[in-house]
Length: 127
Image (cartoon, rainbow, N blue to C red; front, side, top):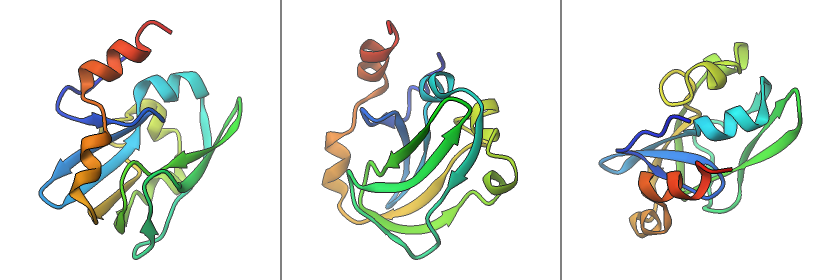
């Protein structure tokens, strides 16, 4: 299980990379391994508003269909258009090519509820 030390994590297996007032969001390596091959993903559009803890989209794998929950509130600035053609990028490169959306952070205090890499690893590495 790969974990990027500089990122933050939600308990719903979403990673967050913060750059100023922007955050890039994706699905963790642990989650993509659990879900199996991802065959479809539904993403928000540019301009959509996300609310922390609410669905930001959904994903279908060979094993299940699941909702993806926003770790932060904010406005969608960009989404990974490549995932529409090749959702398996999440399986191949969850932290680089498989990113999901970039948002403008609405409330930076929400970052305080996210986990650091050590806590995420400690919680899920043994499952």
